[in-house]
Image (cartoon, rainbow, N blue to C red; front, side, top):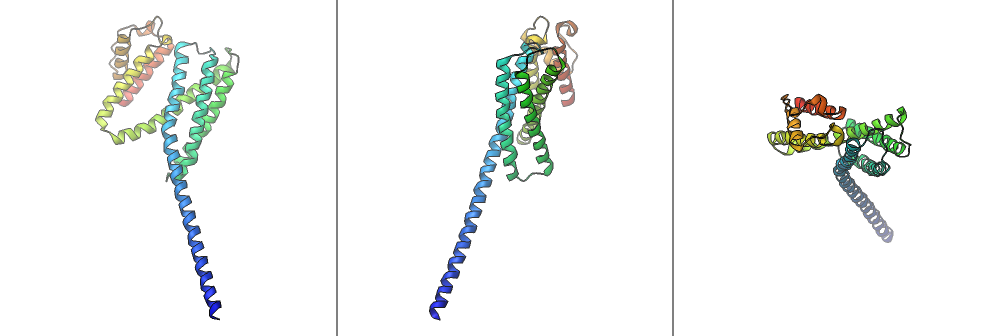
Length: 245
């Protein structure tokens, strides 16, 4: 009888230790899984804006130096690779963000961005391997591709700007954002397709500053010096400046 009780006690102790050990292993595994997902989320959330910036730079180069109905094979193949990397980063962020406490609407919007990037990658493949023609299908897909990339870039940058505005002095960031918009506007106006016969950097800088600050001052004739693309850039700068002020 004593031996039987002794063995029962040993068995209970072993079962208890085994149960606690399993719980500890499971808890440790959950902890490290959550930490890994958070690390992946932070890395992908940082790299997605950079990837979309690279894609946007390719689009600006194509629109600024080539006709819209033209077909640059090397450029589109590079854009496909960039969008593929962006798609992988967004997929990684979407999977790993469930480790972060977020509202359901935030997850739904992330799913929407994920669906958009899948369509954009397919549009890029269609445009890259299509013979350039002035037909509706080619131009429509190219327009959707470029517009979608701009939309995702604005979405990612706006999220980044919210964090920056919370971290730094709002007055300083306001002035810095105006200066940055003026500089970007100057670079866009210097693109060959933005003007009829070119523009000097000083005139481009003054025109961009005048548009952003909505002063109405000009150094060149807007109607004759700028192409349709240049006028769209000016209207965009005026809209941004009016909204910011």
